[in-house]
Image 1 (cartoon, rainbow over the protein chains, first blue to last red):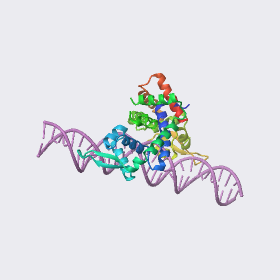
Image 2: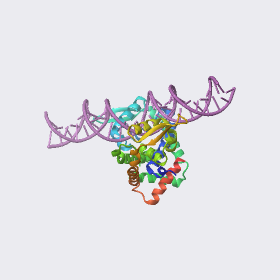
Image 3: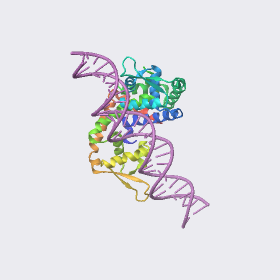
Image 4: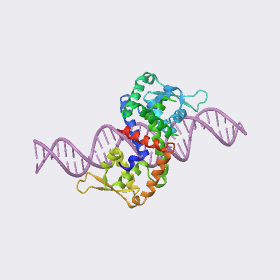
Length: 137
Length: 137
DNA sequence: TGCAAACTCTTCGTATACGTAATAATATTG
DNA sequence: CAATATTATTACGTATACGAAGAGTTTGCA
């Protein structure tokens, strides 16, 4: 075993790389990236979130998010509307396409998740998730 | 708990994000990135590896690696030499600077690893590493 | 032996990601 | 009302990632 095989940073990077790549393949036919899917999920949970709220929840940089939301608007996943009461806030709403595709896309995520965890038994899956949450403090 | 909080892809991404960011801060004074550190480690193990060998060991795309090795050459960490017998292979060698800074940089990695895992007890640390290795199959 | 196929690396285009700074538009507050 | 704060966007710089295409080198088979 190489020295970096005992390095948690490396292990996390590679596990993430694999999970991300796998999910990306699943989403490719829909023209959606993993991060964009994450944003859709956030909006499925509650529409009309502002850019700031989305970024805070998903721990995404504000500047990064701006570009992502633009591309999602271009591709017809979301619509951006300034808040009526406080026009500084830009709120994101789902398009019909995004709502209609929800079941399919959720299924894809499930599938990708299951594939990544296929080498673990149920207890291990739960445990891994708990440990990862603990790591984030 | 939001639905993506149960998503292994999201959890991996965020744990990686945190670990990577922390390591990055530690390395910043040295003008080195986490991935570049990883490549140094590979070369500390055995100098003169080809780009392909490095990429295979570290699971780095060939195209990605090309740019990284360039930047490391510019900054004086490594030197690239085509293989004498087969000029398709580009071999990477450490500079004196890279050799001299090894102890310090290894220490930084240890520190960053410990910080990331500070919320876990010994058993959990070992377990998390094992699970992450299993995930990679 | 000569050329096609295989191999290694690089380049290019696109997307993320983060940091900083500057800017614009809007709200709040003293 | 003016100074300040907040939110989002834009711009710039750097780094990673990956697919696809391209350049140079070697190999292997006809």
